[in-house]
Image: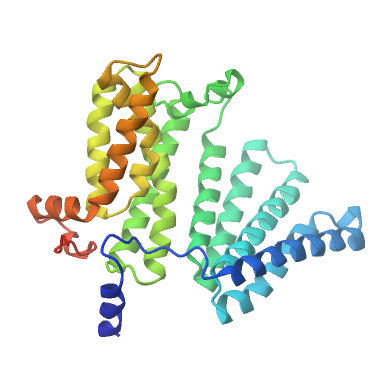
Amino acid sequence: MAADRAGKRAALPQEDEPFEFFRGFSEIFISIGLVILLTGATMLLTIVGGFALMTLVPLATAAIAWWWAGYFTLKRRMTLPSMVLASAYGIGIVIFAFALLARTNLDERVIGIAGFGLSALALLLWYRRFRLPFSAFLAGAAILGMIYALTASASNLAPIATGNFGLLFDLTESPAFATATLLFGIGAFLVGMWFDTRDPHRLGRHSATAFWCHLLAAPALVNTVAITLLNGGGTGLLAIALVLITILALVIDRRSFLTAAIAYIAVVISWAMGETGGTGWIYILLVLGAFITAIGTWWVQLRAWLMGILPDFPGKSRLPPYGSTE
């Protein structure tokens, strides 16, 4: 098994960050069919069940998705159809949970926390049964919804009324909301690193699960830190933070953090150039495009150099290999 995995890893391009969304057009074709079929089944259940059973229709849809996943996920090992079924299951559970809780006399905050909490548990159960990496992303999103339901208030949601959504992630303007986002990002990052260290060569589902965890963690961490520094007038500090984010992305070999930081890198470039009006944005795009292209092109070499100069630290040997710079 070790030799087989080593051979598969050696066959991959060194700059590759393995990720599989679908294996062929047949999966796209089947996924379209599943979406149409699930929609028809849901509508049929609605007609047959009548309005009195509307709360059970989403649960029935989720049950159908679970049933079909036994074939498409466990037997056929299809990626995109499995993601469609997991999404249908998650949506069905969320609607059922909230519809059921809405019939009680519970407080709205309690309904939100319980609804998202039950949905997260159901999605974790899906991951436990089918081992689908994408379901970790759905479970994480439900956990984030539960955290937001716990911390939401009229004061920290005030920026929505003014249309200034950026203030939601500002630690000084919306401390409860932004702190919750930051803590969630740290938690998702640690979970992603746990999966990453179990599959340093990135050949199995642990690496794919880590990808979805980092996809949740990167926006939560980067947006909160960057917006807080930017709104505080600390553009210089934002530049330092982005350098640290770049180093972190290189060390763990995950490009999602830099992807989440692209807009803020553009802000720093604009600040450094001292030109934001007129044709300044053209030069900003050129510099930003050149920077991102260069980082992507020489990612392997930059990472090998960085990891070479860094001292040994706990878990370094469990990160993806970095010895070769070819």
